[in-house]
Amino acid sequence: MSQPRLRTVVVLAAGEGKRMKSAIPKVLHPILGRTLLGHVLAAAAPLAADRTLVVVGHGADQVTDHLAGVAAGAEPVLQAEQHGTGHAVRIALDSTPDAAGTVVVLNGDVPLLRPETVTALVAAHEAAGAAATVLAAEVADPTGLGRIVRSENGGLEQIVEERDASAAQRAIREINAGIYAFDAALLRDALGKLSTDNDQGEEYLTDVFGLLVATGETVAVHVAPDATETLGCNDRVELAALRRLLRDRINEGWMRTGVTLLDPATTWIDVTVALDRDAVVDQNTQLRGATTVGSGATVGPDTTLIDTTVAAGATVLRAHSVGAVIGAGASVGPYAYLRPEAKLRDRAKVGTFVEVKKSEIGEGAKVPHLSYVGDATIGAQANIGAATIFVNYDGVHKHHTTIGEAAFVGCDTNLVAPVEVGAGAYIAAGSAITSDVPPGALGVTRAEQRNVEGWVARRRPGTKSAAAAERAGPKAAGASEGEAIHGAPDAGGRGPAPGDTATE
Ligand code: UD1
Ligand code: MG
Image 1: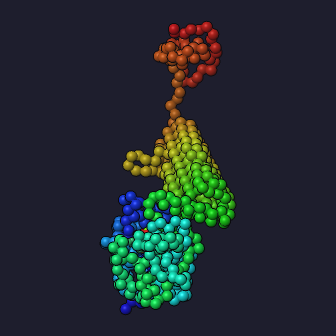
Image 2 (image 1 turned 30 degrees about the vertical axis):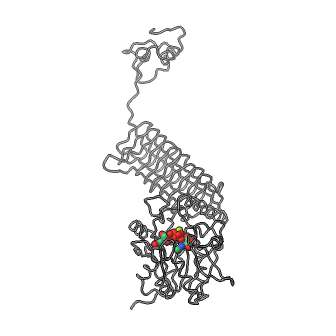
Image 3 (image 1 turned 45 degrees about the horizontal axis):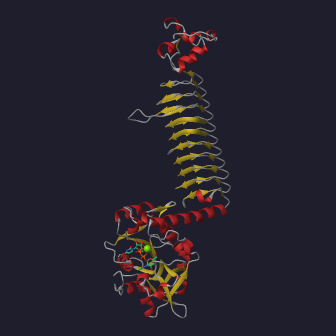
């Protein structure tokens, strides 16, 4: 025989969320790093429940897949037809015949709930030996929510849904947050007695309270310290409002730990992000996923970092980064794009209009302007000139480029991978490098320059270029094609020649 369960968590997530008007089940909509359901599961995590059951129905496959990714220990329980919150919990308990002790039930759409609040609710419930405890809050606008109806002595009498409430009950502003702790045996017994005699013809979990009161059991109300924690989400306007509230809570938390947020109203930090003291986040910045920012680093303005590590003292300005590692004192941007496995060593620089993918930029190395770096290893102190392209893809395979320490790559170079440039080597600007350059060598692949004298005057007569060339001197306007081809500019022939009217 299996051991009795001491704590079971049941999260209700089978509803459709019609008003979201979405192909995605309501509980899978994300805010600041987790889905609504993910936030609720995180709030319940410190309870260390023996079992966590998630009641799924609408979009059951999607919700089940999501659970496997975010809470491997949580078990989906299918509620094929949604006959109400009481019905949902009944199905969950039927799948757990050995549940004993405390059953904690949480609506899946209450993402602002704090772990401390759930823990305190359960502690109070267990300390009081109550049959059931509900989380309640006093709110300014209780529209649509279940009301806490108290007796004259202040104890809980029943919970009544708005659509079933009398006018006097509707005036009550103390609401049911949809978070509860129950004694398992008493809950199981009461669920068997629920009726569907209400406006929606559903089995209401909330009716368990009235049933327990009627049989003389102790029921309790635990008031949430902050009413915003109890806010649910029914449509996308409410979703946006919850996102703002959570943003403010997260931002306040970071500022209190010593992080500077220059404009908290435009700074969006996922709950999964970690910031060190004296990090500075400038305006219009989003920090998402597993991003971390070290002490003294400055991030933003206008920056999005996803799963990105920023070490101490680095600067990231107007950048978009996914899955990159930015070393201490490194500098990124403005207008840089770092892609997965971009790794900048300490004091490396990735400058303006530079994209880096799956490449290591060595300590103190620089890629300052207009470049694509893909599948490369760049040695320490190397300098990559403007408009250098790491040609990593032959249409079928990706290939690697290695640049040695302190190598100097001239502007507008194509490095056709696989290729290696040795330590201290130079590449002449405009080269297409297709074979290795030994250490200390100069690699150059440019064709020699030739100038066709007088070409503009002959082939583009009457244009502004022709006029300008004519004003500039006799050579531009005069010489014949045959004699005017030179391997290099002829500086001696550039003197002004006023009055020369060339070909016209
Ligand atoms: C419920 C409460 C109400 C409370 C409010 C707080 C009941 C009867 N009423 O109302 O007192 O103020 O939450 O937000 O419980 N669900 C299922 N299966 C079902 C029905 C619902 O899993 O058959 C899930 C939903 O997906 C949702 C949660 O239960 O996550 C709450 O359901 P919802 O329909 O939103 O209940 P409310 O009408 O908001
Ligand atoms: Mg609801």
